[in-house]
Length: 353
Image 1 (cartoon, helix red, strand yellow):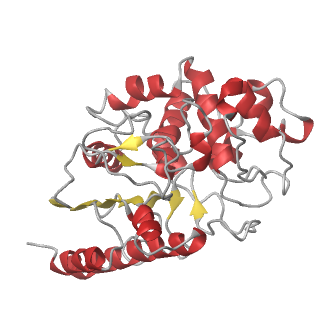
Image 2: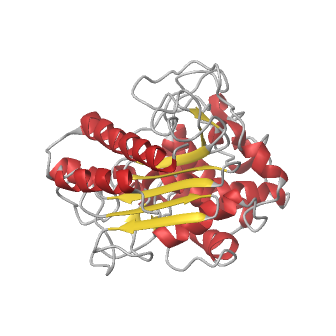
């Protein structure tokens, strides 16, 4: 069967210039559907943006825990001897659940030229906005630190850990941290009209000068992300030991005050968005306890293991909202949120669930 309502919704989104390029993969039970624009196939690159926080940074952190190389209770002072007093007791758990007390700050131009320690020192120089563990504020800088910790745990750069411990074992083919501006079979997802010589969508990632960003520096393909999602559904131990799936997929932020009104109010597991009534973008289709993540550039995935249900949506929506509709800042973000809501709603009508 075709997902008729979903196809109509996609055509309307194309007509409205909500995006120009897309890949939509849907699985439910033993059925799967794949819809893509003419310029996209399973190997086409999209800027993952914040999907990189879980694919692969969270997965690598959980795998390191399974190997005994890392613990949720490890503190920043274990990995960074120069961490200031107010942040030395922040734990890996705080970083993965966005409860560290830190907020994202704009990186100065060329920050990465100071090396990984220089990046960490800049993040540490910013004041905490609340005591760690007492509130929630979505924080890219916390996951950037998690990526640096993963490197220390495995003893190799983040891109090498991804290649060796996620990409090769799961048979992924293309996803990578570095592509050229003129890369073939790649969709431009950048939210800026002027790329400034960088293909990365995230302004802070641009300033890392090649240091792989645990919070959003990966370029992904539909085929590789599908393998990741299917591995999550199957509790595939090539990702991390089976006990860590349950550990990661709990609600760690329920009831915590949201201490930054400009950020997500969704609940979080370890790295993953935890779907419940707060998850506006997925709650109509996915029941409570489902997990997923989104990327600012126009990407998302959500899954529910009990229903064997997943939706992967890759688009260049953020760029189109900027160039075609001239939307700025949070107006662009809200438009991309609505795009996901509308497509998930159409899928629900088609699947009758």
